[in-house]
Structures are given as C-alpha cells and as structure tokens.
Length: 411
Image 1 (tube, rainbow, N blue to C red):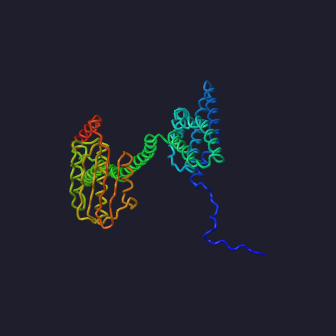
Image 2 (image 1 turned 90 degrees about the horizontal axis):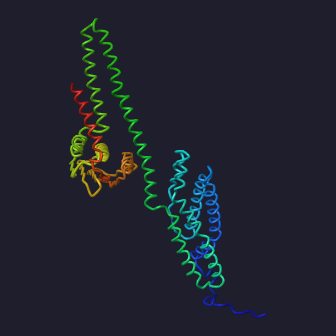
Image 3 (image 1 turned 135 degrees about the vertical axis):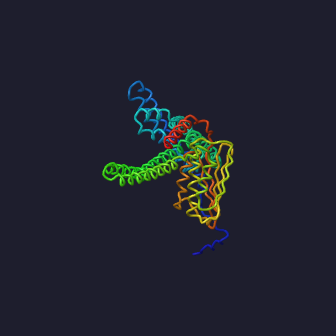
C-alpha cells in the first residue's frame, strides 16, 4: 500500500470562511426581516385607523384611536431597537409626553394622545413600510442566490435608505423633544427647591421669632398682673419685653434678608454683593459690570449663588483672597467666583455645589467648577438675561409695601 507524500504547509488550502463580513450579514438580516415587521405594522395601522376613525362618532372611537397611537409608539420603539441592533444607528427615545399627563385626568390624556406627533409619525412609518418591505425582501432574497457578487453593495444601498427612513420618521422632534424632557426635569427641581425653602422659612419662624413672641406675650401678661402690686418689678419686666421685641424684630429682618435682601431690591447686585463680600472671612474683590438690572428672579438667583459660594470660601477653601466678577455677554449673565485656596472642591463633596448646579439648570443656567487639588478654585455660572422692565408692576407694589412697613416700624 502506497501513501501519498505529505502536502507542504505552504501548499495547504486556506480554511473555509464566509465570503461576506459579519456587518453585511447583519444588513442582510435586517432587509429579510423587513417584510414580516412591515406586514405586522401595516395590519396594525390599518386596523387601528379604520376602527378608531370609523367609531369616532361614538364615545369609544376617539379613546380607541388614542390607545392605538400609544401602541404605534411601541411599534416605533421596536423598530428603533431593530435598527440599533442590526444597522448600528442609535436613535434617541422620544419623551412620553402624552403618558406623563395621564394623571391630570381622562380628557387631557385623550387630547395629548390624539395630537401626539411621535405616535402619528410611527403610524406613517408603519403604513409606508409594506411596499418597501416587499421590495427589499425580494431583492435581497434573489441576490442571495443569483446576484451574490454584488450583494454587499445592494445591501448597503438598501439599508442606507432604511437608515434615512428610520432617522426621519422614528427620531424624536430633535430640539423640541429634548426641550420637553429638560423642562420636565427642571420643573421637578423647581418644585423641590421651593418646598425646601418654604420648610426652612417655617422652621426659622417657629424656632425663632414665633417662640420669642410667645415668651414676650407671657412676660407682658405677668407684668400686667404685677402692675398694681409691684410697679418696679412690672417696669423691669416691661424693659425686658422691650428688649425681646428688638431681638424679635432683628430676627425677622434677618429672615426677610434671607428671602430677598432689601439692599438687593433697593440698590442692585453691585451693592448687595459688596455687602456679602464684607462679611466673608477673606478679602474679596467685587467687580460688577452690567448695563442695567436684570429681572428680579435672575438677580435673586445670582445673589444667592454668590452668597453660597463665598460661604464655601470662608468655611472650606483656606484662601487668602477671593474675587467676584459679574458681567453681561449677549443674552447671558455671567458670574465668576475665584479664590487662591487649597482647591479640591467637587460637585459631590458636600459643599452644596450640586444643589447650586440644579438650581441654575432649572432656569436654563450653567454651572462649571474648576478646582484642582492645590488650587486655585474657579466657579463660573451663567444665567439667562431678562430685562427688569418685564416685571416692574409687582416690583413697585412690593417696594410700596416695604416702604409702608418701614414707616410703621419707625413709628
């Protein structure tokens, strides 16, 4: 028995492998799955539109149509997932605007669902996909057996059209959808911040001025009882009550200053920030270059932002000096607070930086922290600029009320 000589390594045949790369096979799989997905979406769309519109003259027609649009949203989500897995395109998920309003009642939910642009675009996508699905399935299936040399080019051409179609009809409404999601998040921050401020004011009133005024009332009652029996003791008690009144008034002034400082309302950011800087434990240089006064809400946020940042400088920085700069650039109010301290401040370091960032973000502001270890620390904040003239009516009323309260206090 004779044996053939071994084949040299250089003459061995290469191992068998697919002629097409994995990416092309993914595109082929997408094109072949177009037909069943398009058929399911077309049947659902026709049935949903037909039943919903046909029964719209009854009480159940419009609710069925609204529910069908929510189902179309689910079909769109499935198509986005298929495109993400097989075509490699990433399409952001749209915000669930209609579903978010369900807790407001049936009719608001019904109206927002019926005018939902995301649902209607998903309906349009499902409706036009049937002829396209038949075409892509037929061309791809035939090319697998007949035109396989040009199959990669055919698959790429067809899937590029699919990519454009998915991006055009299944993407959120770009800026509008992102803006809705941001506003929903910011609304929660504003509500939480307002609730926290109300709790703080209530606590300060209960633990401070209210307790002191209760003690004052009790002291005056005792003085009234002793007025005829021991006039001297009653006089001393009245003197003590007078002192308590002064302390209570000072506490109320401090509380009112914490809500909205009078110097800020009367003289603006330059004087108000200079007053804050004078209370800081390190020398602070203040520079305010504004062509006018911004809206009261923006001015108040800028004031309290600088106030908290300077408190952090006093407590945590170990700095020898600091600076505060405020200026306007186009339609933005910019704030920069710097110090030459030890640095190392972080957004999650427990110094209130994250809270400031959330408050600024709630009004379309920005908050940037630059604090390397060893210093220096620079915090830059941006706020939208709105002219103060837009809210002068309430400002004048409040100024008049404050002037009247000041006159009453002097008397």
